[in-house]
Length: 333
Image (cartoon, rainbow, N blue to C red; front, side, top):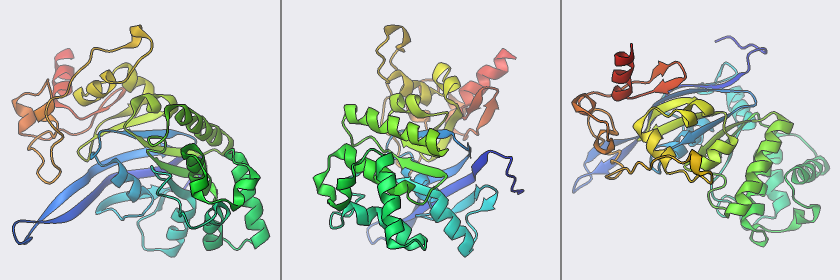
């Protein structure tokens, strides 16, 4: 791939897969594969936000760990500005560590309770740069100011802060190495509603100020509507619908996306959708159904859906993986 400075494309994932081996049976002699992520592809442009949405267990967090190389993918390709991040190359490892950072879901668990905030924020600089102690402290204080933390917080411990303040600290830590991409894994789900809005607005302000790109993982579609440019809907490890936010929110095609959006609260009664209730439970990734993974819960499923697995097809506005949508498109022609 050519690396061009004029190309706004930052991150490109091709057919990423993450399989986990699980022992089963009475004596744990059988090995089964949990397909946490099963062939996901997407692109992320500079200054944009890609939101990844879906129920718990759909593979969102596994995808986040792959993008930050906390876990290496079982298969697939991952490029940053045309550079292959999966190559065994120290330069690529350093590039990935500095340019792709993660903000974890739980600010209570992601901060070391035995270290002061100043030490926590200096740690990435200590490991990855040659800055002096005074320069590290100066950069930490500047970043704390950016995220709305007072200078006197530098010598305090995590337990002295509220949930919103801790998440600000976690965001500051993720920005210490001046990354270009931040993977935010449910960054506001553990916060109160009033604090959630403050942290979201902070992230949007930082994106505009620093030119950041986000992979924003969430199950809350009202939050996604506020921050996203593009949306990828996942179900049982696969992408079922993908496109720009407006086209998906205005005209969702996949039955699963329609059900998710129908459950999103709306203050304006004119914008409320007829509620679509999903029946049944999310299938086990250890024993997924044959055909389309959503067929047992889908109100529009027909026989073909139980026998074959649909592929993502581009329908002008966005991509959809659904035989019913494909059939409707053929009839329209």
